[in-house]
Amino acid sequence: MEETSALMKQVEENQAVSDEHDTQKGKYMTFKSGNEYFGLEIQYVNEIIQLQPITAIPETEDYIKGLINLRGKVIPVVDVRLRFKQEPFEYNDRTCIIVINVKGMMVGLIIEKIAEVVEIKEDNILPPPSIGRADKAHHKYVYGIGKVGDSVKLLLDPDKLLNDEDLSVVEQANEMNNVEE
Image (cartoon, rainbow, N blue to C red; front, side, top):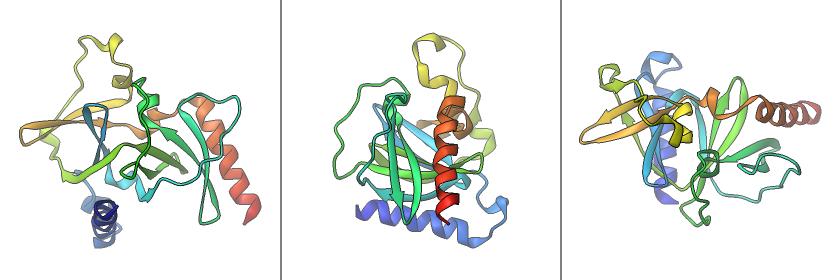
């Protein structure tokens, strides 16, 4: 987990430089899911935490793993691999949760492995290809393809990761937080 705390420090430094959006522009937290690397704009990332006990929620989508208690806040967590209709994976010591802010609500994304914080300039971001979209479920969450050196990162739109039903679970968790405060 040393690399996770080093990356979280990098995220915090990027956010501490200035609260202005400009300092975070073009910076992405990247992570691995299956055989692909994804990127989230750093402005959405609140923190990276170790996997912790998750309380299951009955009658929700299989990719919504449940709720965690993070310093008194109840946060729903989503398994990114299951959300992208990839094969499930066994959680291990590299598995972590990226806590993001989606539409003013906190959500945890369970990911296999954090990669790095990278800067991707706008002219290195291409629109996602439209060929063969039907077979790749996660493309509807991807707004662009970021070129980083010789590799590419699929850039995610956090607002599209959750559908309306998922958001109601998140809103309920937020309501619980507001009642407890």
